[in-house]
Length: 114
Ligand code: 5GP
Ligand code: ZN
Image 1 (spheres, rainbow, N blue to C red):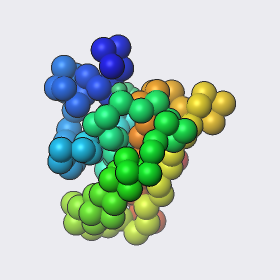
Image 2 (cartoon, rainbow, N blue to C red; image 1 turned 180 degrees about the vertical axis):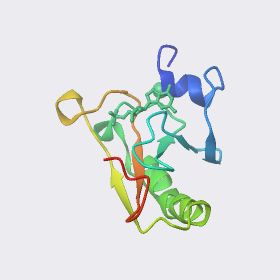
Image 3 (cartoon, helix red, strand yellow; image 1 turned 120 degrees about the vertical axis):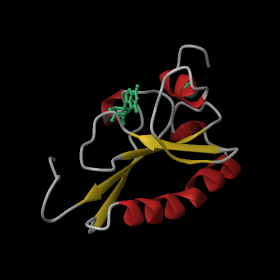
Image 4 (tube, rainbow, N blue to C red; image 1 turned 180 degrees about the horizontal axis):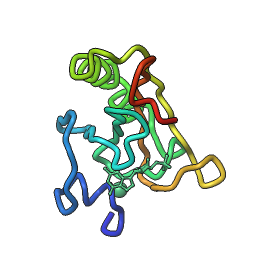
């Protein structure tokens, strides 16, 4: 999709910090670091929200999340918890309409701004 910022990020038209990538999935640091390591996991296929997934795409995307969570745990050893958040539609606080899962690390001691 040409006017989608996350498609542009996948295509390297907009820079981002890569956390994980394979042929189906891209994970990158959120520009707003709600906490240290706040990451977005997106399908490379443009789907606006959860209502547009089929089972295969959902399985492909979610199957990569544990691996990405463990990569964050390794990079940020002081992380003690992790929230997965997925907003769908404007009323539910979605602001970028290329579906994404937020991975928000939680820390007891520092860098937790939320
Ligand atoms: P939503 O509100 O749709 O659930 O989350 C969208 C997220 O995308 C926000 O947390 C916002 O900070 C992030 N975001 C928006 N534009 C960019 C961008 O150009 N680069 C990166 N890395 N993140 C972005
Ligand atoms: Zn897109």
